[in-house]
Image (cartoon, rainbow, N blue to C red):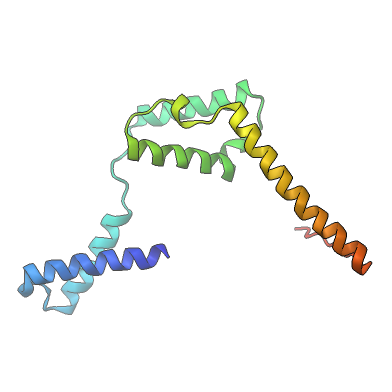
Length: 144
């Protein structure tokens, strides 16, 4: 899906440029160069992150691990990265916001957890009913 959007963005920008500057895009090699430049520009970060800011993030990661007694690999976890990514997207959209306005409270997370538990419990009840109705059950584990 993202590639379709990227491709559409690239071709629409080239088409717009070709309409505005038709003589520039008559050469196929030039068109390929424009596509390559557009791709490079699209995937480059908006700015280079200064070393001081990276150090600040590293210190915060260290505090996260040490203060909450977490394993070192927790910083590489997909779920933590997903949380940080969501916070970055909010900051990019809304500007400089405080942590309190982004992160949910403990009670909100507990309420969401309770809702998920009810859903999983209901699904498990359906599985138990199916097992009781058919009398068969199989389980495998994938071991790497």
